[in-house]
Length: 264
Ligand code: APR
Image: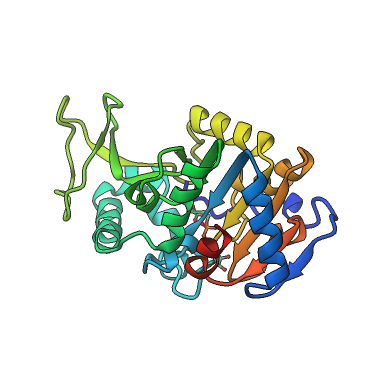
């Protein structure tokens, strides 16, 4: 869901919880989070573009962010696709070519390791780059879709297409209908199965680990406070402060590739 709009008022001061902010790798915070993760039987993780930044995938709102140089409403809405599917596909082809040359980094692999260690684990990602499944993540909801998947606008069939470059406009192998990226665009709702799976993981985890997201796009932006309300210990690993920083128990500033592996 390439939606950049929902900076809901809830995002700020949703719950004036005491939060202990710790800068880059502050040993006390890292030790506390390590101990919490080691002792937990149910862990959920939420990731955003920041976890893939260390793999060279541009973020959305960072200095080199996609939304700095591209108008999302011209490229990531059903209206834009109806208006000019070729333009939208050229943009997604450019992103696919860029991502195809990238590999998961140590933070992606550390979350695969966590998945294998913890009894009940679920990973919720906002990323469409496919680097989590490429690293080996299986207990995963890609709530904004996946850039290597396509969906027929006529028969609705969803398939995988990893052609780089992709033939534009791509056609459905079954009904020859026009294919679109299987990505949740602005104004579109999430897959109800992904949503339900994500909410139940966030509400039943003992630890929620949030990595590399600006925390302004809903529903993912509500997960920190939902987990807190359910009694979980919530941690943020991020380069910059975010609205989540006010909510979490520990906030660790730093690069995902440096911090996340250390936590395990
Ligand atoms: N390590 C950790 N955090 C990082 C790193 C890094 N190497 N690099 C950047 N960050 C942080 C930034 O500080 C920022 O807070 O990652 C965050 C990335 O924020 P966004 O670019 O807004 O990306 P994201 O939160 O994933 O966006 C959410 O918005 O446009 C839509 O659908 C799109 O899924 C996306 C959603």
